[in-house]
Length: 575
Image (cartoon, rainbow, N blue to C red; front, side):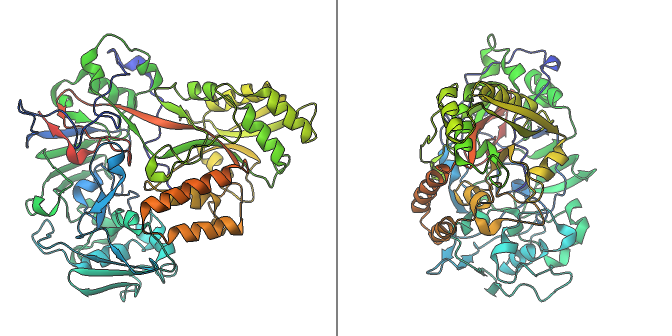
């Protein structure tokens, strides 16, 4: 999967002249009420009007629903593109639920979940006032298969019958036979195999309707036709400056999720991260009604805690389904020996790793591969209890049993990027901890592109490296299947199954869980599978990131869900 921009960022605090406070947070998942908190008027009701400014480091590029890699999150694309389903726009765990968007429900499966049927709501319209039909949804999905519009999520290519060979409507105008539209409001998807989590996939922007007559191919991103509460009125330099204004044909009666309080949304990108945080903290002029969708507070800023309670109240905390871990390739010695992998698992000092990741405000120690959220099926386990600071004595004992009584030397691949996930700081913390157990760790730092090429390669993957994984939606499927399903091992491209595990019993259990449309039952099975795989010590979970972001002083109605871990723009009001 694409590495999301939610990853914690290292920010130079020297550029931030104000005192930041943490600890107290506003409307984080732990403490926010339903649909957020503060308001724009005395009686507590958020008000419509004003301009919301978005200050970002990364441009909102490729603003085409076929090319975007998003799953109905709370950020800019969902203001313009509605999809069959979306996420519940609630704070915390409630926000991990799938709810209807363009459709009347989250989908109706057949008995074995190989076919899903949706019915569109009545009264849906594009920004030009023309009705949205099932044919528009079908066409929007089909164009995402075109090579010139690549970049979006890959699931439909793998899941739809015929999806693996279809090349899009520009080359094959007949379309995909596995997407059927019997009438203007009905659309049916026929899948290769059971997929109980299909309603989650239907949140992705590929499911946004596109009117065929208005499709301009690669230029569509310049003015995509809106189905949401806002339309694009300006797109400069491929999303560096993106201006949205109200879509007068959007009917809030058909959209229970997006509040769309501001009249205008002005997205400005390409900014230095430290400058973004400085502007949000100072909150002068238009910046008082500003937010960021991609820039975290870093440890240096958070270290300046103490004197400004008003500023502390503008720091939001969120959790996103993400795990940072040590990966083993058992095809490489000595990592083919389970006792060596277990020894390393015992030797890890998670306290030093968390400190290297920015401290407990920005990282939480992990002993499970699945994130600590019910939606994923989180089941607590710690098969190799290292405590807070590691157990070098137990590690030495296992090394002796493995045939290394005098210790051993290994090489750890990591990135040179300062991303607090696979960075030199994390690698050094691991090196120091393993050293106490008699394991000499040589560090191999590679620039990001080279690092990624090696860790995702079957041919060139080393035996030991730092890695990370985030889910495209809050469930166990997109977390465990890409990493541990042997049928997803890729020999000629990006391979995410780092252990190259191909256990028929694991593969079978993944298939059985995928048949379940009861997501709670599926979650319990994913948790049990996580624990079962964890016994093999194929990886060492290190920590889950925490996101802390500042908002301008006039921002109201902050909602942060456990789906995205960041502020939901569709709920924000400005004073």
